[in-house]
Image 1 (tube, rainbow, N blue to C red):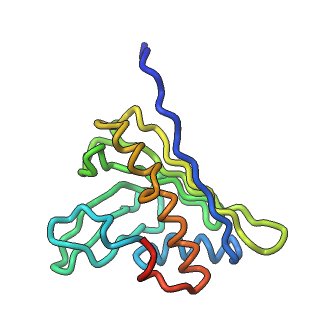
Image 2 (tube, helix red, strand yellow):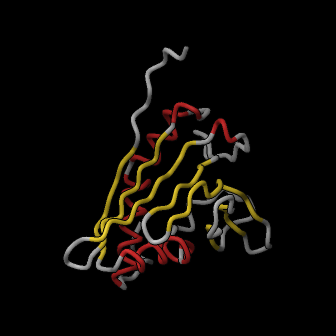
Length: 165
């Protein structure tokens, strides 16, 4: 029996001026357009990050030389309402291939009555991860899901991403 305290999930949300369908497509199909280049693990650099649109699909990044680094897998794919991803990065932000040591990122797209969409991100299951507290602190801070969702909103709104951290 596990007697350790469970680290709480990191939950963040943003409301974007787009339909749920558009928000889902931009989040998943244009992931590389809003994900910041400095958030990469490939020693060869970064040109983009991608989510393959199917259960079992890869969530990964690619460098200019074509080399790739996995981040996780698509666990559930429910367009335009929800995507569930495994996050295989540990507290040092290094890839850990063991699915039993992966956290999860659930993203929900909730249509609002005014035509906008609330995008809700819940990053959870940190207790499975080596370096769990450091990972939770990183994704929960301003450089984590807070800043990432701001960039996503800026892309949807057509604002310049070069000035956004």
